[in-house]
Amino acid sequence: MTIATHTCVTVACDVCGYAYDEDEYTAHFSDLTEARKALAGTGWTITADRKVYCATQDTEHQTALDALMPPEPTVQIPGQLDLDGTEATR
Image (cartoon, rainbow, N blue to C red):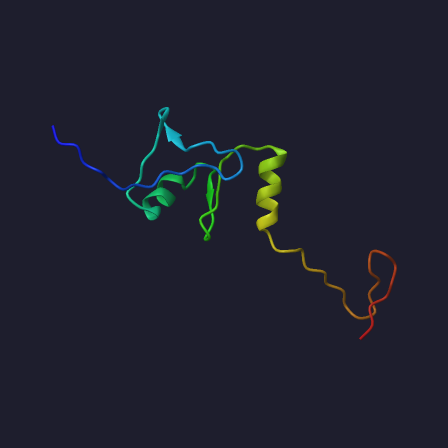
C-alpha cells in the first residue's frame, strides 16, 4: 500500500465551526468550485471572500448573515414627509 499526500478542500461554518458533512463524515472536495456546487441548495452559504455559514437558523448565524447585507436605502422624494415627520428639501 502506498501512502500519499492529497490536497483537498473541507468546509466549516465561520460562526459555529461545524464542518459540512454528508452521511456523517466530513466531505472533502478537490477545489472550491466543487465545494460550491455540492453546497448549492443545502442552505449553506459561501461568500465571494470565502466566508462560510451553515444552515443553522439561530440569532448568531442570522446576525452574521445580516452583516453581509448592504444598508437599506432611504428614499425620500422632495416634498414628501419622512417617517419622522420632516419634509425633504432640495
